Length: 421
Ligand code: HAM
Image 1: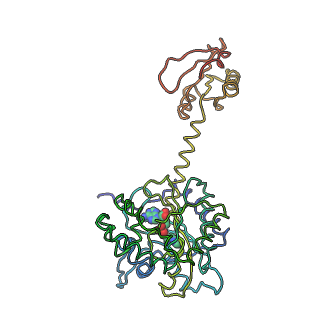
Image 2: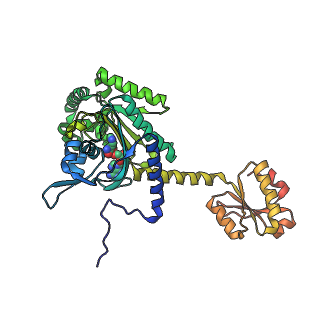
């Protein structure tokens, strides 16, 4: 009988890998607690309506990517493609909101989107995220961004970009939508087929199309920041001010619109060059109308989520890079063929390190010459200086050039400093 494989785009997390997951989750929980966020866990599936109404009919997530099915009772159920809409549903249902007070929540879990699998893109993936609910003020936007940055820092990720934009309040956004549609309509013929289709369903998404045909047009599109009204400008300015005060670097990206319908005002995304095409490892923004959309009271909120697989990919690459850098640090390996020659080895190492100012290793495990040379290969050292009985007798070393097969040569220890290394 044939062997059954896991579903395409899903992955087993093996015992060898699980420690990295535990560690990341532990750091995420700790950082969340430091900011006063408490965990909320919701079911893995919800009524489909939570996401069609929440995430939005015009989005790719709802249109093309949801795992939806009718259960045996005929109810339409969806495996959650994201957490925010489900959190809002749970907060309303469980009365977690308090008048004049903020509800701070975080989550870790798995999510499902029927996307084309590739590096960093799965059909079942994991997110850590946080939501700050019931504050309309820019300080809560800044708070969740600070929380995200604290986590990124704690994980040891330094090389990343925070992209920031404002979609403005609903009025500004609607105004911009019209301006943008007019512009795109006049360039319709030049747009990709996918973007042509989006012109009526979700025109803002055309702005972050990665298709070069679209990019050529969208770079000339009217800037969303020029459509913001005073209230929206003030909100955005304050967010920027608070981020600067918190020592957080950001880049303003007027074309950043994000793939979910519920955003207004601030939107942001974290990008890493370590990831290739799927370079966003986190994103979020403000969603002031989602509560109303899902039948609750008008409640402003803001939050973000990060892809755990993508964070782990970045960490893996950083580790690899560090190994590479370490390798680069070692120029010379000193190889005593027995412990009898350790004193000479130390003397030679001193000369190499202090007089030649080259980096150098001496084996401290009394290994054979062969395994010392193998270690040298691992570090990609340039030269091995071998000290055996003959060399000790003549106060010299045998020089082996490790990069290519070049004849070994002998050199007096006193001449090591004169050599051109
Ligand atoms: P999102 O941008 O759709 O936002 O997803 C957040 C992160 O989840 C992405 O930046 C990425 O790292 C990861 N991710 C998304 N899809 C996949 C996939 N197919 N495979 C692997 N990783 C993936 C949201 O989900 C919003 N709910 C964020 C939010 C919270 N906004 C406000 N609050």
